[in-house]
Figure 1 (cartoon, rainbow, N blue to C red):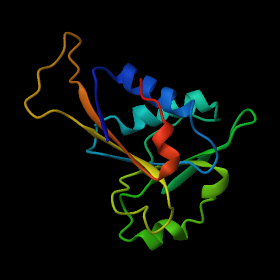
Figure 2 (cartoon, helix red, strand yellow; figure 1 turned 90 degrees about the horizontal axis):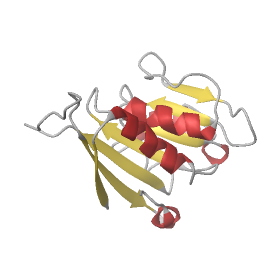
Figure 3 (cartoon, one colour; figure 1 turned 90 degrees about the vertical axis):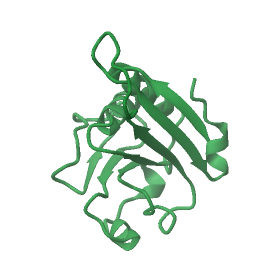
Figure 4 (cartoon, rainbow, N blue to C red; figure 1 turned 180 degrees about the horizontal axis):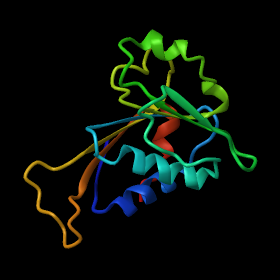
Length: 156
């Protein structure tokens, strides 16, 4: 498990881009954190680095949105599992996990019944934290690999 402090939204997007450069079809990321923690900012940076079509937005009104690649890479599937009550409901979305990079927001407890390996990323706002000069609270990011695939990932 790795813990990082991400001081700004721009750097949250850069973390997404850094991880995107190491992804391939079949990779799954579980993304957890409270509303406004930076999940969509992370995913936007990831999507831009993957070169996918369409703006990556908060998946509030859809359960899953596919962003096709504008090049030779895999599509990005952005999932909001907030309204799902059971892992079987995630499986019911009929996502092509093997051919896509999948980011599942609010994924706690949802993936182990659906896939064998994933990267668990939790973003937290510090409680009682001091705001920076820019007025932005830093985020605490915990990255935990599940499966052999993720032990080779670089975070810096």
